[in-house]
Structure formats: structure tokens, C-alpha cells
Length: 376
Image (cartoon, rainbow, N blue to C red; front, side, top):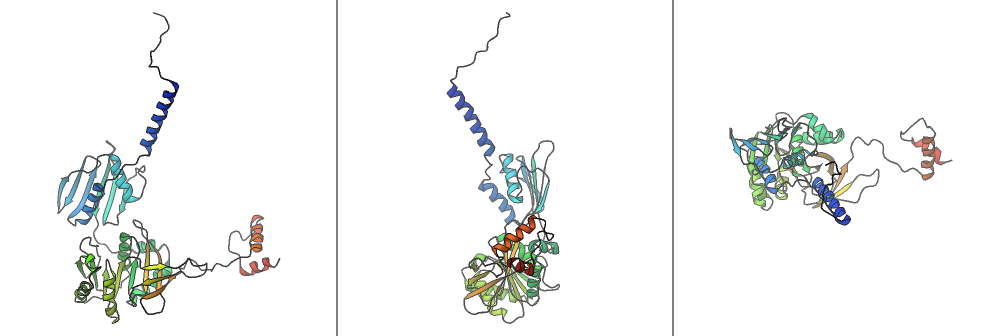
């Protein structure tokens, strides 16, 4: 009874043992690397809530259930989420934050919802609360955030709007340019009678609009006669400004004839119509060409980004006639000194002075210093 105990284990060769260990490590690595797939049904369900104007709020209790506030009454809907990781992935896509970030979230979404998110203490589930935003006037701080401190560009666009010159907001991201269009509409003078043209399929909340006309904007892309009829409906409302959520080429052509009267202004969002030229050299302005942009349109505000839009710059049309036009990108106020080439020998001397404690530090070298060093 006091003998040595032995445990019987199945015999396994060293090769099989190594393969088994490597296989378990490979499976564990795949499990850690695998990201949850956000199915098309889940993403499509979210956009159904966005398009349905009767949906006022949505609460997602992890995988437990979904409650929808629709037409003033709460109802329980079938949850499309199977795993908790899918809820975290939806939150990551909407906020652009990593899924491992478990802090409470509050952020407005470009789809017209306000998102609140937190994690329950008892079960550790992720709760998402969507509340539809009501139209609010754009805050001045929002404009400064979009312009990224480019006060000169903001001043130029505000001056053009004060003279009722048409302005196009262009960029590849639909939500981005629409959000910038909403912000720029806040630059219109108080008391201005602004009539909005919105897409019936995804209407844009127009704050302070005197009237709103809804239409299927897809028809305007192919039917010039429909664009003229819509313009007549808008002009019948006696607008000071017409603000269009989407402005295809037929609508721009119809608007161009009426803009020459100067009795009303026009501002719209559209795809980026410019073809950039070769990259400009330092100290020169960037140029681009366009085809089919009518002559009365001389200002384009370029928008970048999608969920976090920013204004990349302002383009001004150069004088000229014809369908092919040239545009110049205006430089911002942050670059006050033009860049100048420094000779190689001067650059080497300047670097040696910085290494041995030049008191000017990293400041720009004045022209007279540069010329003096090049004569050594």
C-alpha cells in the first residue's frame, strides 16, 4: 500500500504531441483574432430605423431584446443580435472607437440619432440607446470645429453668402457634406427666408426653414424637365435662399438661369465635380478643372471624412467661359510665410548651428541669415 503510485496515460509519440500543441495554439490564435461579423441584416435594420421617421427611439439590451418607440408607443421587436460581440461591433462602427473601450458613450450620429451606450453592472451586457435628434440651429463652435481653425476660409465663404453668391458643398461622403451644409446654413442672415429641397427617402432635418419641399432626388439625375418643374415650385414660395440636400447636374443647369437675376441665392450639396491637376509646388496654389458646372457657380467648399467631417478647403473659379473651367484652391490663413528653397550648403551650416546651441532654436531662418550663410 505504500508503494509508488503510477498514473496510466495514453501513449503518444513526440511528433503527435507537438502537432497537438501547435494545433491548439493555432486554434486559440484564430479565436482571438477572429472579429465578429456584423451581418447585412443587422446593418440594414439600423438603417431602417434611420429611414422610418415614426421611429423616435430604440433601446438595445445586448442580446436580450430590442425595444422601439414608434409613433409615441413602445413595442418589443425581435433582436437581430446573436452574440454580445455583434453589439460591440455595431457600437464600434458608429463611434469609431475600439470594442475594448467599455466606457459610457454619448455622441450624435450623422444619421440623425443621438447615441447613448453603457454596460450593465449585473450581467455585463452592452446597452445602446438611440434617440432621434430634432432640428437645432448649428452652433458656432461646430463651424470652428469643421473649419479646423481656418478663419480665412470661413470669412471668405461668409462674405460670399452675404452677397448671395451660390455655394456648392462637395465631397465623396454623403453624410459629411450634408452635415457641413447644415452648418453653413447657420451663416445666413437672421430673418432670411430659406426654402429647403430635401430627399423624400432620407429627409434632412432643416433648422429654421421657412418651407420644406420633399422630392425623389433620383428623378432629378436623369430628367431635366423635372428639375425645371421643381425649381418653379421652389420659386413660388418666394425664397431668399434655396438650400438643396442633393443637387445633380440638371438641377444646377436649371438654377443657373435664375441666379442671374440676383433676387435669391442657392446653396447645395453635391458630389465632388473637380479633376485635380498635378500636385502644386510649394508656394503655388493647387488647380483643378471641371466639366459641366454652370458659370454662375464660383465657390466650392470641399469636404472630407464621413462620420467625422472636416472642411478640406475652398475652391474659387478662375475667370473664363465655356463648359471647361479652371478652379484655384485658396490657401488658408495658417500659412503666412511662403516656403523658399535653401541651398544645400546653407542647410548644412544651419544644421551645425542648431546642434551647437543656436539661440534661435527651431524658428524659421530669416532671409538675410540665409543669404549670409550661403556666402561662406
